[in-house]
Image (cartoon, rainbow, N blue to C red; front, top):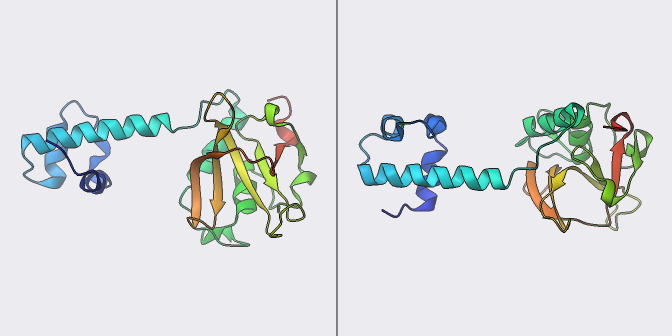
Length: 193
Protein backbone atom coordinates (compact mmCIF):
# COMPACT_ATOMS: atom_id res chain seq x y z
CA UNK A 1 0.00 0.00 0.00
CA UNK A 2 1.28 3.48 -0.84
CA UNK A 3 0.65 6.00 1.90
CA UNK A 4 0.12 9.66 1.10
CA UNK A 5 3.10 11.42 2.84
CA UNK A 6 0.98 14.42 3.86
CA UNK A 7 -1.59 12.16 5.52
CA UNK A 8 1.13 10.06 7.16
CA UNK A 9 2.85 13.16 8.50
CA UNK A 10 -0.45 14.41 9.90
CA UNK A 11 -1.05 11.06 11.56
CA UNK A 12 2.50 10.92 12.94
CA UNK A 13 2.21 14.33 14.53
CA UNK A 14 -0.56 13.06 16.75
CA UNK A 15 0.95 12.71 20.22
CA UNK A 16 -0.32 9.17 20.55
CA UNK A 17 2.26 7.98 18.01
CA UNK A 18 5.27 8.59 20.21
CA UNK A 19 5.71 4.84 20.57
CA UNK A 20 5.56 3.90 16.87
CA UNK A 21 8.81 1.97 17.29
CA UNK A 22 7.19 -0.47 19.71
CA UNK A 23 7.34 -4.21 18.97
CA UNK A 24 3.61 -4.19 18.21
CA UNK A 25 3.02 -1.19 15.95
CA UNK A 26 -0.49 -2.24 15.05
CA UNK A 27 -1.57 -2.14 18.71
CA UNK A 28 0.08 1.24 19.14
CA UNK A 29 -1.47 2.65 15.98
CA UNK A 30 -5.00 1.30 16.39
CA UNK A 31 -5.64 3.19 19.60
CA UNK A 32 -5.40 6.74 18.22
CA UNK A 33 -6.71 6.08 14.73
CA UNK A 34 -9.48 3.56 15.20
CA UNK A 35 -9.99 0.88 12.62
CA UNK A 36 -7.13 1.23 10.17
CA UNK A 37 -6.72 -1.89 8.05
CA UNK A 38 -3.52 -3.96 8.30
CA UNK A 39 -2.10 -2.57 5.04
CA UNK A 40 -2.59 1.02 6.19
CA UNK A 41 -1.00 0.21 9.56
CA UNK A 42 1.99 -1.43 7.90
CA UNK A 43 2.42 1.50 5.50
CA UNK A 44 2.20 4.01 8.35
CA UNK A 45 4.72 2.02 10.41
CA UNK A 46 7.09 1.87 7.42
CA UNK A 47 6.72 5.61 6.84
CA UNK A 48 7.47 6.29 10.51
CA UNK A 49 10.65 4.20 10.32
CA UNK A 50 11.83 6.06 7.19
CA UNK A 51 11.02 9.39 8.82
CA UNK A 52 13.06 8.49 11.92
CA UNK A 53 16.00 7.41 9.72
CA UNK A 54 15.86 10.64 7.70
CA UNK A 55 15.67 12.73 10.86
CA UNK A 56 18.65 10.93 12.38
CA UNK A 57 20.63 11.47 9.15
CA UNK A 58 19.84 15.19 9.41
CA UNK A 59 20.91 15.34 13.05
CA UNK A 60 24.12 17.14 13.95
CA UNK A 61 27.13 14.96 14.74
CA UNK A 62 27.75 13.94 18.35
CA UNK A 63 29.67 16.30 20.63
CA UNK A 64 32.57 15.15 22.80
CA UNK A 65 32.74 17.94 25.40
CA UNK A 66 30.05 18.05 28.12
CA UNK A 67 30.13 21.88 28.02
CA UNK A 68 29.48 21.90 24.29
CA UNK A 69 26.80 19.22 24.59
CA UNK A 70 25.04 21.36 27.21
CA UNK A 71 25.07 24.35 24.83
CA UNK A 72 23.48 22.31 22.05
CA UNK A 73 20.92 20.86 24.49
CA UNK A 74 19.91 24.39 25.53
CA UNK A 75 19.58 25.35 21.85
CA UNK A 76 17.41 22.29 21.14
CA UNK A 77 15.21 23.16 24.11
CA UNK A 78 14.41 26.53 22.50
CA UNK A 79 13.47 25.16 19.07
CA UNK A 80 10.12 26.53 17.97
CA UNK A 81 10.37 29.64 20.17
CA UNK A 82 8.92 32.55 18.17
CA UNK A 83 11.36 34.98 16.58
CA UNK A 84 11.01 38.58 17.69
CA UNK A 85 13.45 41.36 16.81
CA UNK A 86 14.97 42.55 20.10
CA UNK A 87 13.13 39.80 21.96
CA UNK A 88 14.59 38.17 25.04
CA UNK A 89 11.73 36.22 26.58
CA UNK A 90 9.40 33.27 26.15
CA UNK A 91 7.19 35.41 23.89
CA UNK A 92 10.07 35.65 21.41
CA UNK A 93 13.82 35.73 20.97
CA UNK A 94 16.02 37.35 18.40
CA UNK A 95 19.17 35.64 17.13
CA UNK A 96 21.58 37.08 19.69
CA UNK A 97 19.25 36.41 22.63
CA UNK A 98 18.94 32.82 21.37
CA UNK A 99 22.72 32.44 21.25
CA UNK A 100 23.18 34.14 24.62
CA UNK A 101 20.76 31.70 26.24
CA UNK A 102 22.33 28.71 24.48
CA UNK A 103 25.76 29.82 25.65
CA UNK A 104 24.39 30.46 29.16
CA UNK A 105 25.65 34.05 29.29
CA UNK A 106 24.12 37.48 29.85
CA UNK A 107 22.25 39.05 26.92
CA UNK A 108 24.58 40.05 24.11
CA UNK A 109 24.09 41.50 20.63
CA UNK A 110 25.91 40.70 17.41
CA UNK A 111 28.10 43.73 18.14
CA UNK A 112 28.91 42.85 21.77
CA UNK A 113 29.66 39.15 21.27
CA UNK A 114 33.42 39.84 20.80
CA UNK A 115 33.45 40.92 24.47
CA UNK A 116 32.73 37.30 25.53
CA UNK A 117 34.14 35.38 22.57
CA UNK A 118 37.16 35.41 20.30
CA UNK A 119 37.35 35.01 16.55
CA UNK A 120 38.58 31.62 15.31
CA UNK A 121 39.14 30.11 11.86
CA UNK A 122 36.65 28.05 9.88
CA UNK A 123 38.91 25.02 10.38
CA UNK A 124 38.72 25.48 14.17
CA UNK A 125 34.89 25.47 14.31
CA UNK A 126 33.43 22.95 16.75
CA UNK A 127 29.84 22.32 17.81
CA UNK A 128 28.84 25.05 20.26
CA UNK A 129 30.82 27.81 18.52
CA UNK A 130 29.02 30.64 16.75
CA UNK A 131 28.99 32.34 13.36
CA UNK A 132 28.53 36.07 13.74
CA UNK A 133 27.65 38.80 11.27
CA UNK A 134 27.85 42.05 13.28
CA UNK A 135 25.75 45.01 12.18
CA UNK A 136 28.81 46.93 10.96
CA UNK A 137 29.70 44.04 8.61
CA UNK A 138 26.12 43.48 7.38
CA UNK A 139 25.10 45.46 4.28
CA UNK A 140 21.57 45.72 5.70
CA UNK A 141 22.94 46.78 9.12
CA UNK A 142 20.74 44.23 10.88
CA UNK A 143 23.37 41.67 11.89
CA UNK A 144 22.77 37.99 12.60
CA UNK A 145 24.33 35.19 14.60
CA UNK A 146 23.85 31.43 14.51
CA UNK A 147 25.05 28.53 16.64
CA UNK A 148 27.31 26.06 14.83
CA UNK A 149 26.33 22.43 15.51
CA UNK A 150 28.70 20.58 13.16
CA UNK A 151 29.62 19.99 9.56
CA UNK A 152 27.01 18.33 7.37
CA UNK A 153 29.46 17.16 4.71
CA UNK A 154 33.14 16.18 4.41
CA UNK A 155 33.91 19.20 2.21
CA UNK A 156 32.84 21.56 5.01
CA UNK A 157 30.57 23.52 2.72
CA UNK A 158 27.33 22.63 4.54
CA UNK A 159 26.76 22.99 8.25
CA UNK A 160 24.22 22.23 10.94
CA UNK A 161 23.11 25.39 12.76
CA UNK A 162 20.62 26.41 15.39
CA UNK A 163 19.27 29.92 15.04
CA UNK A 164 16.35 32.20 15.76
CA UNK A 165 15.42 33.77 12.47
CA UNK A 166 12.69 35.92 10.94
CA UNK A 167 12.21 33.29 8.23
CA UNK A 168 10.46 31.01 9.20
CA UNK A 169 9.74 33.15 12.27
CA UNK A 170 11.01 30.84 15.01
CA UNK A 171 14.10 29.11 16.39
CA UNK A 172 15.14 26.27 14.08
CA UNK A 173 17.78 23.63 13.40
CA UNK A 174 18.76 23.49 9.75
CA UNK A 175 21.52 22.56 7.34
CA UNK A 176 22.76 25.57 5.38
CA UNK A 177 25.78 26.48 3.25
CA UNK A 178 28.79 27.91 5.04
CA UNK A 179 28.85 31.71 4.56
CA UNK A 180 32.29 33.36 4.82
CA UNK A 181 30.65 36.71 5.63
CA UNK A 182 30.03 35.31 9.13
CA UNK A 183 32.98 35.33 11.53
CA UNK A 184 33.46 32.10 13.51
CA UNK A 185 33.52 32.82 17.25
CA UNK A 186 34.35 30.75 20.32
CA UNK A 187 33.01 31.59 23.77
CA UNK A 188 36.06 32.30 25.93
CA UNK A 189 34.95 29.80 28.59
CA UNK A 190 35.04 27.05 25.92
CA UNK A 191 38.77 27.43 25.29
CA UNK A 192 40.36 23.99 25.43
CA UNK A 193 37.07 22.05 25.20
